Image 1: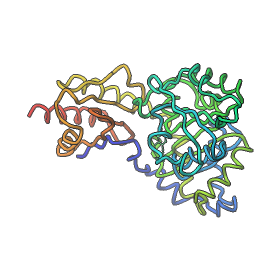
Image 2 (image 1 turned 135 degrees about the vertical axis):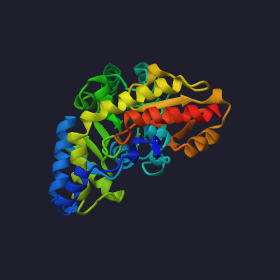
Image 3 (image 1 turned 90 degrees about the vertical axis):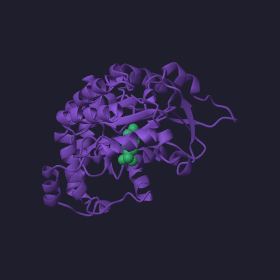
Image 4 (image 1 turned 180 degrees about the horizontal axis):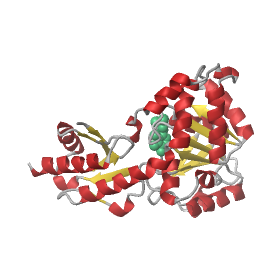
Length: 343
Ligand SMILES: *Cc1c(COP(=O)(O)O)cnc(C)c1O
């Protein structure tokens, strides 16, 4: 048995999702005629406490549609130095929106509101316009850390004083909500636009949601079309998305419990080290430098033992728990890793 801990994106649609895809009522969504897409967008807006929502093909498309809608070429965006939009979206903000990034180093993904304040540009002929602040919750590179509601509120205060909108990359916002005991709408209330992934821990086969004001979503719909994201009978994808939003959130705590168990078990293996306290959701960052193995060698050995995980940083391997990983698989994975290091 292969234990795949590379990402929560490997989750396949549930049998219930497959049936919903089969049964979905559909129409041409570019004409606004797909009832299932409409239902998903309305439900998502309601859950996120926003006026409107848009079904997009991926998290990257949702984030970049937001950047394009908020900004003009030559504008500047403030974001955390290890954020997904900065590190992992192929430079899309520059390539597509012509936006310059201004990164701020965070603590576990958390930016100090006073650093954000200092980075906002005044009016000067030499300066770009600060057009957007982007936040990420949970923060992937920080190991699935939750950005506290109070921090988001403080940044919202700064943004309001300067009239700068905020976008939230909430690819795993539901994990943050479950871990913090805060509603997704409360987090989303701190920002002008929010992107959430349906295809990660929530197990839908594809798609993300971008939500915001009605005027923002109207404009975003134009950008989505320009980006090639206008889909036709997309109800077949919206149907599992609806199940993701309404029925898959309540089980996310299982992934968090499994991540914590994995963190403890790995941390007990000689040569491995995990900041167990820092495991708040479904991501475990494991420091393997004590084994003397390179990331490549470690990953190759795990693969032979049937455990898959991804390289993250020098000497750091990322494990992600998800719906298709049980507690006994976590114990089995830790046993196999312990075994391969004992050789
Ligand atoms: C996965 C992810 C994205 C992008 O989602 P895709 O659907 O892979 O394009 C954006 N932000 C964060 C934090 C992510 O983890």
